[in-house]
Image (cartoon, rainbow, N blue to C red; front, side, top):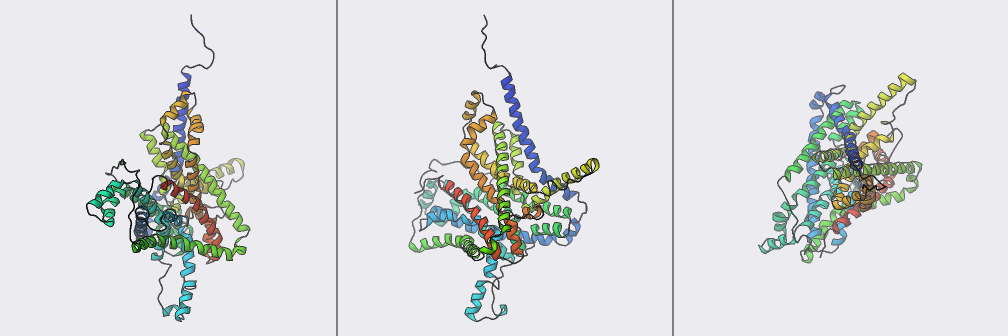
Length: 562
């Protein structure tokens, strides 16, 4: 006799439903990646098939100068950040001196200051009419600039210094993390063989930490290539400045795309060199890599040297600019606090918040899709979705405007032909273009953070949820997202701050009569009204401090220190 059991049918419909649901995640990841990489292919397409080919003219005239200056800038910034980042990371990790715990997180603070902001501050301080030269003339009785020599801040060397002071935290952050992960036994063996602390650093520590340092240096060079505000203010002829000039002044989008493709070649070379530098390096965690680090005890003079090494970049990279902005903001508060400032602050907050949530949603979709299908094709999709982070903002703006403007023109023509009215620039002429650009550029931050956090969750969690009848979507909502709350908040904050600081893409893509805090600061600085730019600059700096403190705490918590 056959028993009939009422209730849910455990037949083949459940596996079929699970398979269909699983396919939806793959399709979502595929569509998302295709949209994200669209700007890259748009730039390459227009570069090869421009309406007016000015590539020969660029090669004969301005392109060699742009290339030479860009290389000099990147080499100078790379060398400066490497020296400052490694020196400070080694000092706070391995040396005991007064104020070490303070400098562990404080050395990250210059990261909150955009390079163009620090350039504006030091120009106001060090220019001929600034307080520094004015005081020197009063002290020594000099009457004009011909009576003395003073270094020119608006120069290539000045740009290297300004950009280096705010980008060294990339090398410091990854270098310190690498130093903290190394085994204390390596130091003990090296010292027992008679090597000094300095010799141990160069012979043992640095070669092991090279992969992490290479990643930090590549990020520094990409950000240097992306910079527009500093090089424009200092009149340094880089590829980014050439792209703006070709597009905005000459009105040639094809020529701008050709310069953008040249910048993409720089990016590809940087990524290739970074991966090549660690192609044969395999590192495994030592058994004692969680043991307390025994720092070097030093004499009082050497402790003061360590203190100076850490204090100098913090002083010039954050304290002096921050204090100057605070003073100017206080003195000119009544002039700065006006309806335009309030409106632009709201624009920045809303745009950055929308982009942060969008990147988080897409990042979770991509990372979870890879967790469900950890295949080579999904790995390729994840890498392709991260291309935007390597693209300079100006290049990304070119790639975004091409498809959006094409769609707007197609839709406008369609509506004119069939309905007799114009739709205008729905996408390319609205804030949608900015949110799209921010999402493409910073998607790698959220997707990478979520993917890394998901890898730490045991697969048995998924199996238990699925055995209870939950679909992959419900498993994500009920199991994974609550466990990822901290990672999601941190990723959203980092993207939010990056969007607040983004200048090149915002300048190109913003709608008419639409400003953000970054473009607001740029407009004042371009008009030599540096004092009025202090308050919006200070807001941008303050917004970047919270995620920096969170990042520092996460690194410190990863290792028990003695």
